Length: 112
Image 1 (cartoon, rainbow, N blue to C red):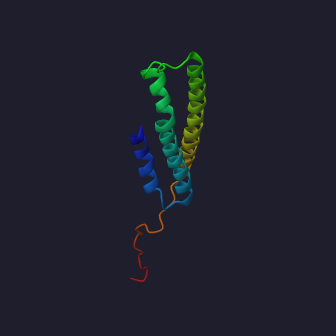
Image 2: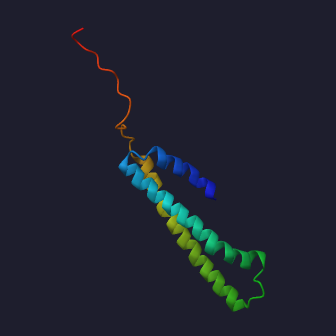
Image 3: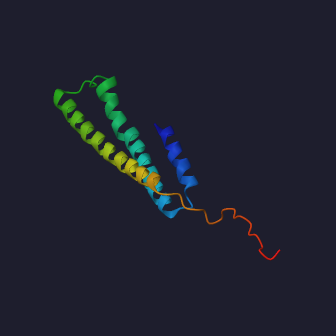
């Protein structure tokens, strides 16, 4: 899951000189990181109890409450990640501006 952020990080580094690209890609990267941290700290522990431990000797009401919390948490995670993907698409739609420190063609002296 975390490896999918690598292309976004590379795009952020390569597009750092463009302020608008940098802003959009930074929002994307931050939202993806938040989504991953949230998944590991909140979603996966609930998955562990519900799926792997088959409820872990919880009552039916406790399991129902956990499932409701899991559904809400999953939708929240989806919304955060969706914001990141939206800004990723916005960044990729922008034209790439010329770099300020790019190599310039030598000027030809007309007098020679």
